[in-house]
Length: 307
Image (cartoon, rainbow, N blue to C red):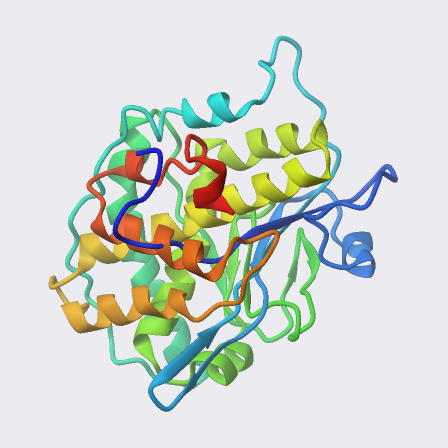
């Protein structure tokens, strides 16, 4: 699929470079953050996902931070076409339909971790099929709900910079409890949306998409960097939608919960690095209405659909 139709997408990605000094990158979060995040790739949902009344505000920003990437000898040049031809995207594969066995969402630390781990197990089942079909590794990510996690990506971003984030260096999804409760309260749909989005970045890492996008970004000018950021992040939103559709009306994720999770992607701000609010929702819904990973090909999409 080149352009999502009917449904609309969600939040973008930023890449911060650690190591040799270079021009300011639109992928950058903040300079001090780049200084402590060395040798790894990190994707973060930055901003707010706060529930109030009948509205939910989700200001999502994804941040990627890594060390200098040195192309291997004989490694093909990274292009949009290279990314579009990733085996996960072409010919594409449907996710396995899964019946998620989820406990009641509790807000204490232990209860929240159990809920997330059960949901990750369900995400693992859904994503194993397309990853295996693409000849890619299948590994479950690690998880932490610690309020101030630290791993191979260094210190966590400040609360006003990130709600949840993924570190490819140690394959850990961080869902800091206090931040999630402050932003998503006890709304199961919002918690699932954030987790499925972060898992989408894990899938991108396993498939080699993040590494290829990073190689391309290093040769890009500022405006292309921003566009690459948007394509990465919008694809993660689409991947989240694919999962929510695969789990809808099966097990403990009923249609109302799945649709509420997708709807949470609607309340975002326009962002140069993440896409317009309209496009952010467009891609989440494109995944929800899609049939396979090919429907999340943001790399072949027209510039206007990833603006």
